[in-house]
Image (cartoon, rainbow, N blue to C red; front, side):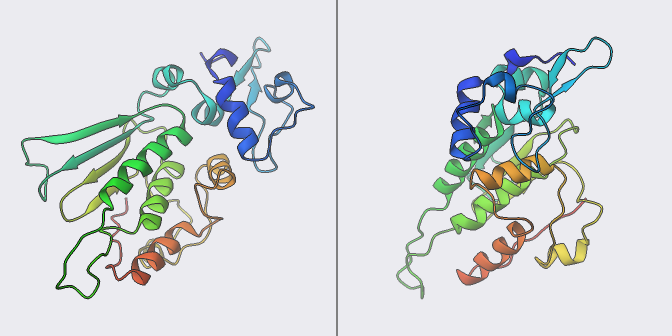
Length: 237
């Protein structure tokens, strides 16, 4: 209720809309920043009109995708990613490297993937059958991170947490699994397309950070198996 058009990052909006192929140069910002114009078929108008005074307010998803960093931090204080790196196998280590990734969700996602890829370095072992194998398959990491961002519950007071240990990487997405998803099938990588945040899912796909509907989790399983890694483990709420 406290947000206005001033909370949106207009250069970022233009750049990402063009990158997604959704920007029409013949239209003005007033066309897009309204309660009438949809930017895509599966995305509602970016603004909604208040019943009491007729004022236009940006929708939550519009702020999280296209908002200014300071505005997102003010309006959604828990909408960030906590990325931590420990040298041992648990959190008892006296020191850790921590990153707090804030700002628009596309920006957060790119920063998180960049940091995760640093941990996916090649492990050299001349006695192994695959001496130059990466510690983690980057494709699986990206799918897991995007899934955690797109499908989290943004009403919960907790960030997405990515924690790196010497022997594994843990990714925590706040909220329970979508009610229509079978938990046992999910754990086996057999999951259909169920959206918690439809606009996020569509836009992350358009920006080519996410797979098409329902392909993210199966892609993680397949990528892990094809690269000789054990299957991922899921703990579901």
